[in-house]
Length: 254
Image (cartoon, one colour):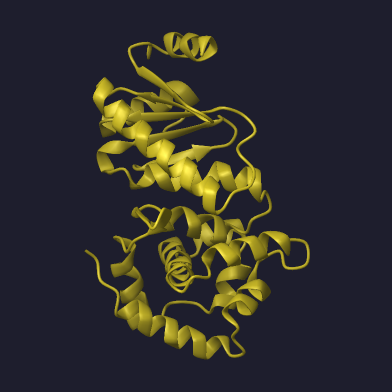
């Protein structure tokens, strides 16, 4: 905590409030009441994710910086990292050991980004589509029968449009994308396809089973496709994709 206080003072950010939520330290430029609400979200998400998915925690304490305006977010990120943020919402930086959030855009990014350091610790070689699929699934989340669940969210509309236009790749193609390809080749569709595949697995009671299985098979099935097929018990993934697309087409948000 002393090192963090010194760091904040060095960058002219010693006015920020701080709260510990192991394995995170939550730092914010809002009121104490706002920080407390956000800290409760962090605690809830961490507890539920550990309960259902992750057997290993991040190996070091991570800072979560919460900024209440776009201007303070951009200024804070630049002061703390020396760089401008590449996204208006928020991001996790492994090298910085921190998450940076513009919470004026909503709290979804907070839970999304919390997923990433857990995946990094629990499943270091996780394919990008799985890492981002899980993270984006919990952008819009709630508790159901004591478990964290993802709900439909703003990514649905774009995916439904892509389905109508025939622009959604096969699951074999999606899972074979490199990290660079995932983010740079129609990244919006890649995110939403991954998210709503996770959502389908969740709603069919298969998500936790799939995550455990793909983590176990990481050496023999590094991109997770074979494990996905086995979890779904499908012999024809082209036919499954058509059924999945019909399923997605019937979803609604809000």
